[in-house]
Amino acid sequence: MKLRSAALLVTTAVILTAAPASAHFILLAPDAWVEVNVLGDPQKAAPCGTSDITKGTPTGKVTAMTGGELLHIKIKETIYHPGYYRVALSVLDRSELPADPVAETRETPRGPYSVSGKIDPAPKPPVLADGLFEHRERPAPDTFWETDIRLPNINCDNCTVQVLQFMEEHGLNKEGDFSYHHCADLKITANPSLPIDKAWPGQ
Image (cartoon, rainbow, N blue to C red):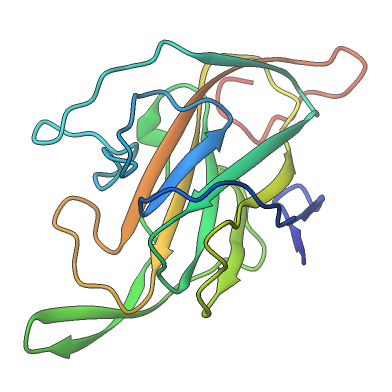
């Protein structure tokens, strides 16, 4: 499977195998910014899984990267939902992260259910890649989703990369619409041999 990022760089999804776990999804790489339990919680609230209602304990982990490098994304989806993933990057503040995907819904006796979520075929900042790992069949229980995404060449001491799962055929999540969310903290140092990407804030 090949998908194209906002910088028109190809990312590749690779499926590997490992021992099963049980959650909606867990971000295994880069290191998550908050501790999660065996269910992957907290993950419901936008933009990064926590809220005043659902609090979390920061891990303090920061992944150091060089601008223009490939960032490895590794996901474990352990409770199946049809749908896809999106990756976004904030530079100055997490408020830069985009709203959850616009959802098409249908009404049910239990309230609205998602039918599909809008995927941008040509993502631009702050979205790095959209429509990743789109699937409508239950993956094997020992499946990982993995891809490499090119980072912009920027300087950023407190970047946040957000990995969002949009779920089809799912009821409304009061804290996060039809999506689940995980984040990781990054420190990006620009590569002096490459031009600075001025499309990103503060550059």
